[in-house]
Amino acid sequence: MFNNLSDKLDKAFHVLKGHGSITEINVAETLKEVRRALLDADVNFKIAKNFTNTIKEKAIGQDVLTTLNPSQLMVKIVKDELTELMGGESVGVNLKGSPTIILMSGLQGSGKTTFSGKLANFLKNKKTKNVLLVGCDVYRPAAINQLKVVGEQVGVEVYAEEGNMNPVEIAQNAVKHAKANSKNVVIIDTAGRLAVDEEMMNEISNIHKAVEPQETLFVVDSMTGQDAVNTAKSFNDVLNFDGVILTKLDGDTRGGAALSIKSVVNKPIKFIGTGEKMEAIDVFHPDRMAERILGMGDVVSLVERAQEQYDEEEARRIQKKIAKNQFGFDDFLKQIQQIKKMGNMKDLVGMIPGAGKMMKDVDIDDDAFKGIEAIIHSMTPSERSTPTIINASRKKRIAKGSGTNVQEVNQLMKQFNQMSKMMKMMQGGGGKKMMQMMKGMQ
Image (spheres, rainbow, N blue to C red):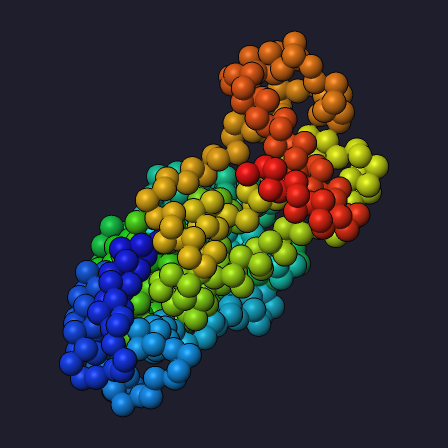
């Protein structure tokens, strides 16, 4: 995400390299490039101009510390201002109310229905809430069925009334159903249109008045740039919504919506969607996003995602198996599944400082583990639990069953053995041996 913007900002900061101080002349040249980068990212011209003017005021006259050069100081100032531009701090979802009612709004194709499921999954898992999804899109063919599929994926009940074309009535009945069945969160998926129209606005306004939601969220496709910001303004004028959700941030996002929307509607971005999986939802942190845009990575989010998948009981079980030399391919497969749950691979790499820039032209396939999983699934239960029994004839059978070749099976076996030895050494505190082994692997 934001790769083009990141590259152009990086080039802009290069203007200051080699200079001993920040002056009006060199800062003007840098900010010209910064403004151009923002405009290319589809940021509103007025916002881009105000942004660079603020940076200029803060940059000129600043003493450059001996530990920093002008380029580094400018990066810090831009990072702070990008953070402010996107909202300053993260804003959580309001879960007051019995039940809490969350009304989803947005244009057709923005990812509203899918994100309703992601949000239900997020609240169910992170906030231990009993969630009800409500299908109020009575116009789009298969909209209710899509919501039911999403609900089944995340294990959340979906309330719908087949044949009822009155979304206000459906929403009211759903709230009654939630109260009667101890649901403490109701997420209402409303109809979208291909463009803003009076009929659509009246309908969602009527639903809003009827159920009085604690949270009204506007879902926007981040790939639509400035158009998304203009649509948000139209919706906000009618609904006065509480926050914004940006979807499809894993795509070729120029960044205009993320950078502009807070300034235009003065409402916080609350969540972002970073992939197709139901777990691909993050609370929006302006400071972390600013760091990622500037190529600094996002270690905090990476650690948080890892902690979400960390299971203490499973970790203790693995430790015991390693100590007894019983770590097998089934255990290895579980570790892969945990990594996959953290999100798409390109997004994870982008969170590592410096790695995003290094890997920008590398196509990181989300199915990077597909070959490994196919090989392991082609093994018998005894082969997975006791890898030492895998001989040449078994390798041939495994290769044939997984659609790979014997060389690939051998490579996986070698990597597995090296990893098992490392884990054993780390458990026993064999630091020196591990270092020697790592040198041998190079």
